[in-house]
Length: 178
Image (cartoon, rainbow, N blue to C red):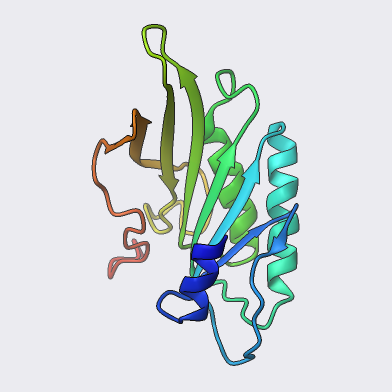
């Protein structure tokens, strides 16, 4: 919390972290700042609870003077029972909800916690999803599928991205498939 507050206050990287259990973690004393980076946390629970948490956080943010649906958003999600739940299907639901708020530049970060049999340290598996409007003529702004853009494994204080992909790839190209 303190690092993010310091980055925001210094205006090096204006950022807002929001979650339903903490509200907006920003004391914005200036009314003229538009935020270009948001992090929304939704931890634990079942899939419907995660979606409800997300919508509550968006509702809170949308009432703030720094609200910016054109900003970059990272939505961090962890789901109970993640072994039986498809993260792609959760990401698809999240993108559909965010599109209603006109939020398109989103990366969804999912967390799966494992304990390897022959290891004493836990393994954290992150998957990063995004959605591309104008992917085809028939889709435009109809969210039908999501794209896994990268995976990250954290174990023994080592972080390995499998693709080293840009987490915010260009969403709207010059070819709108028209």
